[in-house]
Length: 218
Image 1 (cartoon, one colour):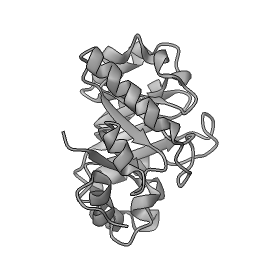
Image 2 (tube, rainbow, N blue to C red):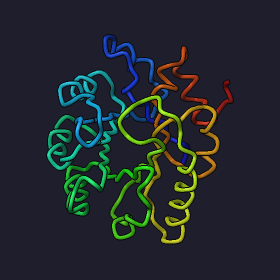
Image 3 (tube, helix red, strand yellow):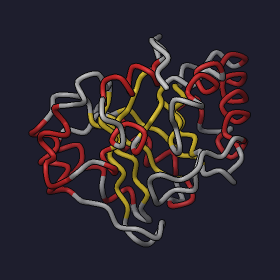
Image 4 (cartoon, one colour):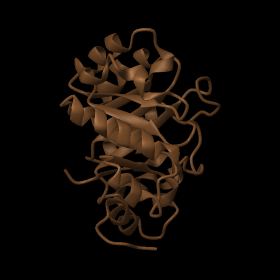
């Protein structure tokens, strides 16, 4: 499959959100970072803004729950029309139960791996996942520097899915830009999440196409 690009609205200008979303026609997903100020030291947005975004775009919504109680978000996000939900396994006691809760709504279920969280913590749950979100920064803020060790983690996940004949996707989030996107694609990342690289550019479409590897723009 072609590399998918998820545009993270965390770096968007919320005072003109409709115009911002209209410039993301080349993106495959709209990435939503929901933060509670507890699991991560930052607050972002909640259901009213997610509902607003749902009404402003037809693109699939990809919700990344950086919250201490992700299980309480699932039903409301499903009602709004979110298509993908990932959570951090450190926040729940029963990951399998939450994955099944997400999937019961017809939503793709993923688990996010922080930079210091090893892959083997997912050994028992990988067959149940639709995707793994590899964090290439510590979660909580946009415009952080990319942590290069994420590439090795992506390669190892790709090796595991090939060896075990699994079909989960690999998503990567944090510091993704035109300089590292080639290495991420070569490592077999399927979905690249980008915030400041897209929204900090003059031409959103060109930045998205660059991330996808269709042209090389510097």
